[in-house]
Length: 438
Image (cartoon, rainbow, N blue to C red):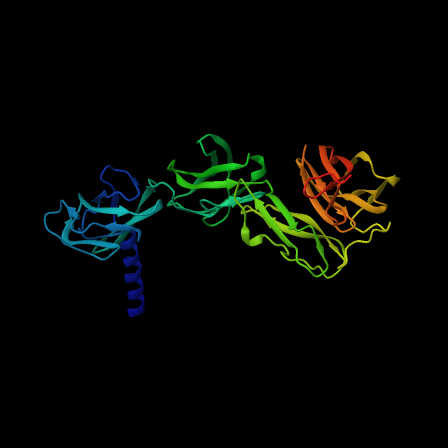
């Protein structure tokens, strides 16, 4: 019999929980709020006790953890009450907090920190049970995208080829659009690139620097979130786009040496864009001269944007005793022209580098060959006992070919056309002091 009575009481108690009659709305009669992020807002609730028999004795309001309650901002129009709170639960208490068939207002101020959809849960208690109602709160994003940082490119960086644009970006809400705006050094707009979002806070795009004229550029991040907040203050500035290889001057001096003696090679790159990366200039400054013959040596170089190049310089190593006056052709020369088998009088000939003319002076065989040629000058090698002579266009020099203090030849550079030196060679016989020996 006692068990049966307990069961009946349990049923009656369950029914009393269901029929506890309270209506919770905003003070304006709505069931939701729309507020702004990071701004303090007054949340004012109406608690309507429709129960005809009992009073509401306590009201608890549970706020989201991202809301900050403003201390001492709470209130109510109930005549007598006590108030207490934790970080997220606000409590009003009194035996007649909201008397039967009446309504009261309860309010507080709080600041929502993060955009999104939230609930404030309002729970009322009376002697018969509890009633809970959720008041929806939409927190709207008011902050522009922030903490935008370039990981690539970097200000004052030098770039060639494909450039990957990478940023990290944080926004309180949802991002709508991110793009990169490219301007030149005078502020003129050149291009825009829409960024993709592979994961998390990362946004990226790529561009071809070859699509731009070599020069200085700035890249600005334009970011818009779904609430319409924008940020275009982050810039990677003074970027150098350079897709041109450096130029270079590379030579060895002297260009003809005896075996075992030194020649020194100098390589000087130049770059008008990003500048030369001196650490990547590589050459053999003192190449080997232990073997006789014609040789080339290589210089490699690069600029700060990663453009690279290489070039060669030539030098010749002769035997200790000089080159024989015989008819053999040293490996340096590729072509030998015979003037005639008679004593030299005068001739004119166009020669390229590594070409020479065989001629006879005082019954001895000699050679006049082209060692080096530029747009303005030529370096001649006159053998048997090698003599080097450098002439500019229009210049002539007198030469003693056999070290007997008698000048034997006049060599003149008449002009340079199509990588050929136009030479005039005249046989003479003059004393070194200037007197004629004939």
